[in-house]
Image 1 (cartoon, rainbow, N blue to C red):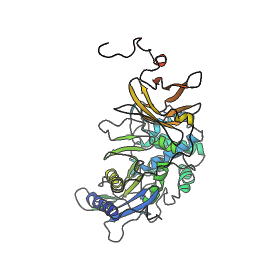
Image 2 (image 1 turned 120 degrees about the vertical axis):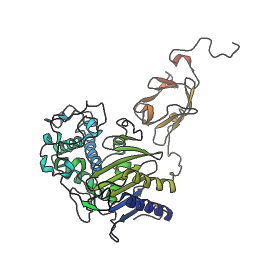
Image 3 (image 1 turned 135 degrees about the horizontal axis):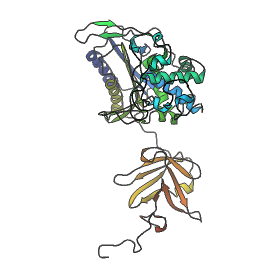
Length: 460
């Protein structure tokens, strides 16, 4: 249930339904269902079908393909947060005996391990997983096609390996771990490894005629962590809430932010896309989105989230090809974000503050470049250029009167106030950059010192 405040305007709902109707008609897909969530609440669903009166709803299962990879990444991140592994650990440390033991867990999550894109023939998406009973059958003899860490090369077997890693460290099957640790806590009881009615059937639509062919639906076996799941638009909106803001029962906000932080450069020719750790990144219509797309024979799926707009959208289709699923879903986010922009939280004064920190706020100078330091409600600070272009960042409060950079050039860098023997503040140090209250003053703290004659005009 949603409150009247959370409901979308009739014009917005009409625009969303129109986009879905156009997508189903132009994409020539048997059916298409979509949903939008805002502020963590499902606020709209809509669907179109080629069968009158039988359109799917937000609780109808579709196969979601590679969106499954993001679920696997969440399981691995949970293992890291529990201290059972580090993202920089080599695989061999936790899953010995594979031919790719030297690659790191982070490289597998970000598709930088250099593994092949697919398992050996026959094509794994259209054949039973029993044909690949062991990791050696999934990886094949030529498991590595590129040097590790040099190139983003999408790899389905890489997430099979990660699923096996989860099984080894948890002592249970990947699907059992997923159900117990993610699906059940989030109330995602319509997300399963095998289809549970009501569910859509997968179809191939002929490219040159309006006729259809049913697609097989195989159990992917060991490849399940790369693309097995069936889910619904409503369930994926619940998952979007976890990815957007975290959930202390499952994964903290800082950990989900880490998953969606770019881990690789965009592929050649695609400067509107990137990849984090099990999470796709996209730039559409000037808007930053993250989530994942998915496809398996007979199905297309997409989940996009805009944190800035606090909007998530899901689109599911039961056609092998046709609908431009990523673009359609980005349009749904944009329709809501543009028609009904997010309302900012009311301004409120800080409940309490440290007078010593307040004294640090205001203008500072790096050389002759002016910056402003602002105190944030959570005890952090924000340092931004006051004019022109420059490197700004937010900083989280640390220990000993220091702060750690959260974004931009200064991510991970330390900002600290350097004090004189009498306790007064001399300057700010940011990764060796000195910020002073006046340009190049006092001279004794400016790296390289000051010219003895100081500032001068033209005549001097």
